[in-house]
Length: 579
Image 1 (cartoon, one colour):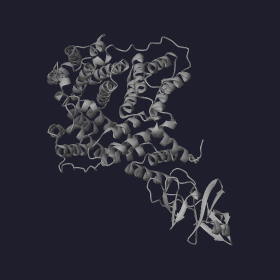
Image 2 (cartoon, rainbow, N blue to C red):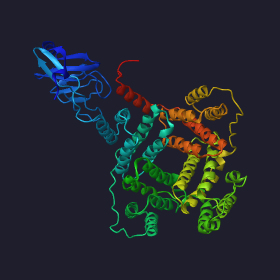
Image 3 (cartoon, rainbow, N blue to C red):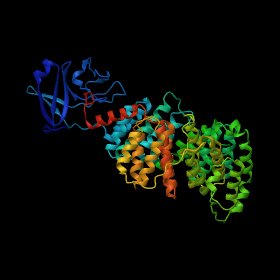
Image 4 (cartoon, rainbow, N blue to C red):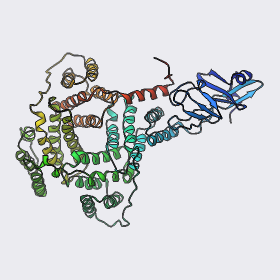
């Protein structure tokens, strides 16, 4: 119960009756006072939508309407008629001896953390960017762990999209992965980026209904794996989900991962590599929110297997050389090759990467199968094929069609996903992913004809901070692809801290209306940088990233404008006034 000390005098009662409304400021708070239908009312003067002063609105039939975007509020309790606006805070008000008193510290109906979680759910349901942004910032200001908005986004995105996992949830997982590499100020931006893409993906979509696991727990892992792959083969979503749900409830996480990876490599380079990448991202998202959410998250990837385009059906993989036939022949040898290499240690030949980037698919596959026979692990080979993919992006020729950036990008993110998968699970099936990824690198060879020279800076006395600002300015200009790569190379030559460079690249990405592939590319490039033991190879990961980003920037930056508005509102600034 409020005490007398909780109330402060704010106005003369007769003055409020006569005018019908008053604006008052007390203890740093701006209040809108109203006299309507014989009652005194007090609300926060800032419209919760975008901060317009509510004293400049109108009151009729118990409804307060803001004149900026016409948000409507029930005057006595502050509840909004319009979900995009949020409720306006009301304050207890009393008349005492002709004076108006208001309690400026009323007890909240719910804790701020609960409020912002509920608002985030509304923002996702209604696909309201401003609400999502305000919610993420509000949760961050309350010290809520990033795992909570990540969980909310994962559960929403997998539940409310019948077609299953797509680009929105992949971006969501990418932002979770790069979160530690970003500036503190950019971390809520990253969450906002993932969440708004999840909301957009789900808008207008039908919800997904779960299939249960089998009643029995007596099915072996091998049998479940085979059933699951058989169902995916004949495009049976429901059967596949029952097998997967049973696996989740009875097997270890690594065994479930292996089941998914095996099905994703039964055919070649499904959906231009997206299927494998999306499956891997679903598992990475579970790393952030907990395996206990696997039964909700993982079934959403099944349509990525059952509806996917199989590359062996494409002419590019069968003509003029039947790459598909070569790969399936290699797959048939894998068990024998792995057995032959058991207990052996592989020594990488000096020309190994050069062979992977060559124009002879037979030589490429022979080199890889010889390596497996020689004891090369899946993780070792995935590392080398991933680096070959980095080289394709780093040396992409800008004379190619713009859409061809997507081609080298798909190969790169696919091979990065295979490498991450090889670190998660040990499965002979993952060698198939490596071999298919190597063939995709081969098919991309014409996009490096001729290869763009790699930027080379022996040493530099440049200031790394100045170079990072120059890089941001370069992203403001169209087509500065080679310039961006050169600046990153010079930043390394000048002894710049890679941590600061990654923060700058993240800052540049999050201020743009970056598309799906660009967001993916940054995450995969950061991963590759962290995985590279060779310093020169690690640098190339960020050089190739800068080139890719420069090819796709600048944009209109509409999403950033929305985020800035949300941030200013949470800081209490007046949005409606000119700067």
